[in-house]
Amino acid sequence: MFYAVIMAGGTGTRFWPESRARRPKQLLPMLGDTTMICTTVHRLRGLVPRDRLIVSTTAELAPSIAQELIELPRGAILAEPYKRNTAPCIGLAAHMIVRRDPDAVMGVMPADHVIAPEEAFRKAVRYAADLVEEDPRRLITFGIPPTYPAEGFGYIERGEPVASKVREQRTDAPGTFRVERFREKPDLETAREYLADSRHSWNSGIFVWKAQRILEELEQFEPAMADRLATLAESIDTVQFEGALKKEFAAIEGKSIDYAVMERAEEVLVVEAPFEWDDVGSWRALARLKGADECGNTIDAKHLGLETAGTIVRGGRDHLIVTVGLTDCIVVHTPDATLVAHKDHEESIRHVVDALEERGWVEYL
Image (cartoon, rainbow, N blue to C red; front, side, top):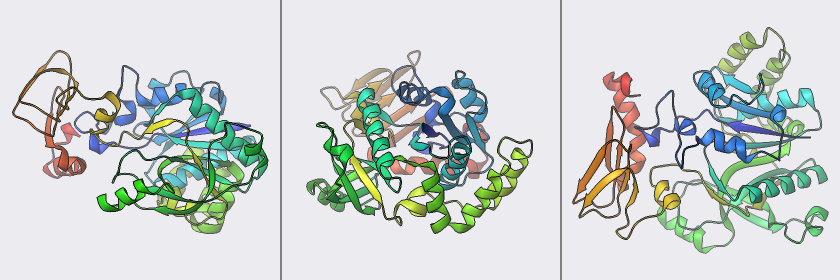
């Protein structure tokens, strides 16, 4: 059977001042009126039933996530007591799944991506699951064909095409390749080279594999982490689980699944995503998703602009934002804080949270 794991523990600091510690990006309606976590769950309808869905988040966010996803059954939300990056949370979710179904296929995805059309996504995940059923050694990731020289994404360099009966039986099967190597976030010049080279794609952070297989890979490459997770797994569905979770998670060294497994494993494949994708990593994503007016402005607010160009403005409908003489800026208004930044400094927005914490202005975090 197929299970899905949604990772929803991020803080979304680049979306301050809307994104806060107790209401980060995945709990915001970045597009339309639906929160990103709800949109992600809805996207899985028809692909996986609610009782085979796990949402992994932090203990601090778990109550808000549960309130947002009231349709999920009890036990669907995994609350991590400490942030330990993606490998430990994926490993623990895999143990929970294997306990229920030792032969399960497991899909893993972040809670805060924009993907369309949804049926194309579901079809691609089903295809990846079939590839894994064909060869249980396979670890599948999705690569996004780049549309601009992005510096904020990791890249995947593809190798040779994969021979597969699953692929041969489908006339519309997406491109499927062995992964040659994973690339770190590049500088602009390198990103331009990747864009011109059809062998590179953006790393989507969406995975499909056998739950048991990812545990075997963790045991091979991260034995200390695997041992802690195996000890913790012994208490799943018992009254000792919460105590064991705090003890074992505290002792685990945090590491991403890319570093822990994907960059070191052998049977890693990349499927060329047949859907549109954006990780909505910063405010500039609004321009890509919502478009711009004739002056290059992206407006999601009650706004009056004079001599304003290339600027992103976001705020509520009950507050007028007026911009005069701004070019290539980001303006975000909330009831208790307002951000004004140049687009060239959008990566520095994440440091605002650190500065606020240093000053003791915790009411704005």
